[in-house]
Length: 98
Image 1 (cartoon, one colour):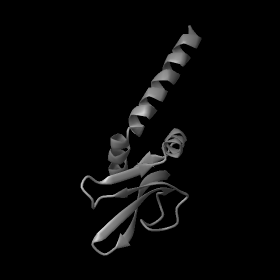
Image 2 (image 1 turned 90 degrees about the horizontal axis):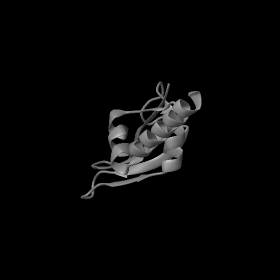
Image 3 (image 1 turned 90 degrees about the vertical axis):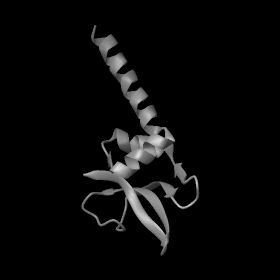
Image 4 (image 1 turned 45 degrees about the vertical axis):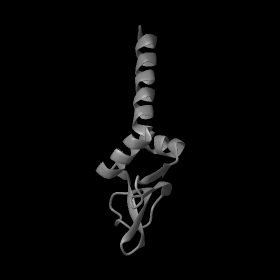
């Protein structure tokens, strides 16, 4: 199964995470398919940078986000965009079947 999850980077006591697409069987810091963004929890407020197009693509083809990545996607507004896209597809499917 393909997942969106965090890959830890940075030094001791200075964590920095990349949001990556990887196979669920690979270890946390193992080889990944694609990097779609990063997350820096240290500054206040924390910094999040996500490539919306690539994240939406991977969600569209069935990649499952981890709990933490899901909350980061929600903060970035990407899950709202995905929800709206699904609702549009649902409306189109219903109107064409009638």
